[in-house]
Length: 81
Image (cartoon, rainbow, N blue to C red; front, side, top):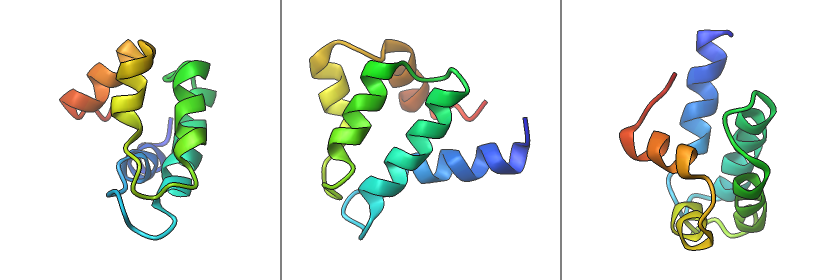
């Protein structure tokens, strides 16, 4: 794994809410994390749903759906690796 690429994707998946195109940036990064096995399909689907809604926070939706427990823990702890 390339540390620089990981850092870039981590930054993108944490793009602040409300910035123009931020939902799409978070979704693109989520696809990257899904592809490497860090995120399940149900969690990725939430990022897809939120991709056109720049102000929508996917994390509460993931929690409400009862999916992505590992991903939520990782995000809440701010884990990069």
